[in-house]
Image 1 (cartoon, rainbow, N blue to C red):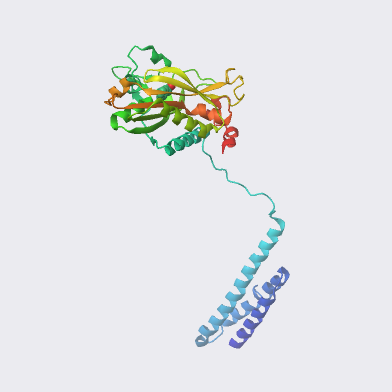
Image 2: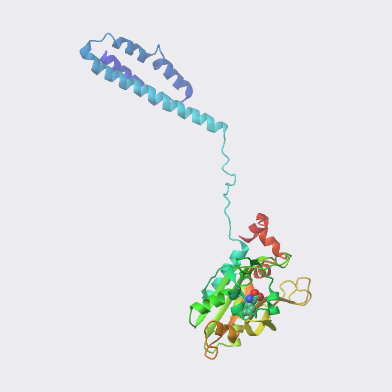
Length: 341
Ligand code: PHE
């Protein structure tokens, strides 16, 4: 019986090498693997084999059975797969499915770009809290308690137990005070951040927006330094050909004070709806730090002078993108955001 099994083994091996289609595989199964097949015949005969021969013959038979069964199973799977892939054709010319990833919001991008321009000029970044005391937001910045200049910035008050002297900061100038009271000159810092004003939301203004303010305090700082810094920044941001002008203005914490205008990007200075037919758009407030502010921060105005400037990040974003309604920046409409990847 052993030699018969070995003969069958040789036959099976040969057949395995020859099976190339489903029809032949089916014939293989019918010959060997069904109840009336060759293997089952041997298994039945095994019962009558003398005890001492059983282990050896059993082992041979088992090896043969595994060989035939495994071959059948694997081949069958292979043919099935092949049949499927013929009916489910893959079109390799179809474009792939892109997974969509987010992008940096235009406001954050403007903020990042502004920061990097000032960092190249040697400014460090300083931050302060959004919720401020009246002192940091107004008092130390030379706003007298009843000074009408407080009305320039409509304030959100946060009620505390005994007073309404806690406010949402109306500008990042509050951080000027925090920097000047915690560092010694020379100071060269920018202060980016969120600010809040109790204003009606419109195409031009929001109740919550972003500013970036700059402060430079040292010996012999002049208005010429201020002009140079702002124009260097503005040319980097808006391009070499943009034109600027400084207009006298008023802020309690700077003297003299100025506002900076850029030639209107839309009409090139000829006058249009956006620039209210003036040809200019305001981009920035600035001035030389008021001596009273330096004194409030224990810096001697006889020894040190400095400049400060501040501008709105949303405004810069509108100017550089040509978006004409500030509210669009906060609607989170992907059709808008996708244009600024
Ligand atoms: N804090 C002013 C504002 O919010 C801007 C400014 C900053 C003006 C620094 C002068 C100097 O309008």
